[in-house]
Image (cartoon, rainbow, N blue to C red):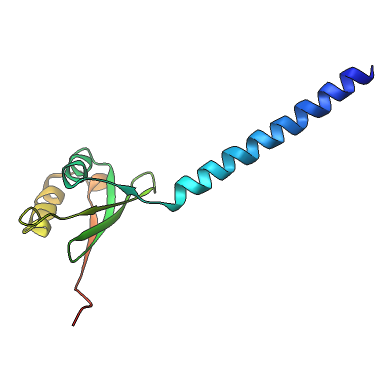
Length: 109
């Protein structure tokens, strides 16, 4: 009888430990934005996975529709007309797949 009770207690505490470990992994993964290449970024845009972005200088930060964050860099010559490309995308995308974007000017003087 005592062995059954011990097994139940061990199972309970093992389950609690597993839940804590899973929560820590989720918390840790939620803090760091996913780093994408510029090509990967446009692939995610075209599949409708990107919800919003902020463009500042050569850096793009944003959120997927899943609320997870990402970041990417605009390489020289690759993002010269990014707002024009985003407007073209938004013109043809369904309303629920359009991207909200903001362009912030450089804070450097």
